[in-house]
Image (tube, rainbow, N blue to C red; front, side):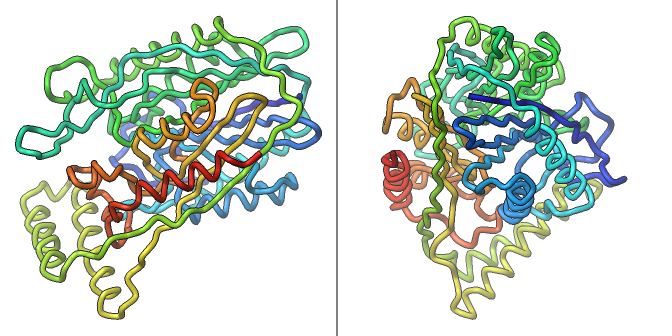
Length: 433
């Protein structure tokens, strides 16, 4: 077994260009990075790229993974590209009026490919180790009241995963050379105005500072319906810079515990699989409903401060979405399915499962129970950032996540049958040997 780890700064600007952000930047709270881990067994490498960005679109993913594949001659299913989903980091995906392709993205891609190419010549013998601990600042964010209305609020009794899985690599001298760790929590403590990797960025930076020259990669959990909570009653309060720092340190300390309580995982081969299930879409909204959305966006834009670029962009994007769906209906070409990407890596006795998009935690738990739950790790925001995929129960309850498909330019909501389709696809993926 061999491995190599590295990182490169992607803090804007790159190529004299800033990427899209949810805010007008007022400096940098912490440096953001592209981090790479290359793991090789039996001369067959896999490449993991962890980016401190909100998300990467499907077209951007295809562009980046194709160039990586061509540069180091590796099959695309053995390339994983993950986004931390920090809301204070670059937007490299099509949400609202934003997009990924730009001189910034071109420069970011060049840096990543250069880093990977160099690391391929730096592979060294390692052993794989696995441990787990816990971290306690996350909570389910969907609360259904007695009237059946779902709002974004702390749900202490809702499904949540507080585990912190930790995979580490050690060289022939038993020295630490790289860390892969995960946590199930939206990085939404801040929304600017400073560029930041949010709590995952601080955790990675803290671990790397303590264990220099080790590189630590944050792999995002399946946290579509989970976010940070600071014990402030029945509502979420706005986060602060000190919250980001304290949560980052708390997670880093949990990773340290996982490192201490780890065991060796023999790894003779690494296997990778990828499938692209078609998730079923429901009927589009009626022309009357579309008209109401357009009118509401105009009224909202008039009421809001015209200097707020994000809110203005949100309202303009909503009307463009209405126009798109209207035309699809008129031309009888409304889509009936949306393609997602499910990936799996087997690393010794460990199984890593990745979903493109914002999946509800219930799906991650389902994937874990298809094999050994303690040795199966589930991740979101892998090979693309797409809209939320709720459970059938959540679709009936409503709430932000159920209706967010409009922001992601998806024409229709999911059918209630989507849960069964997702679970069948997960079962198929986990059945490969």
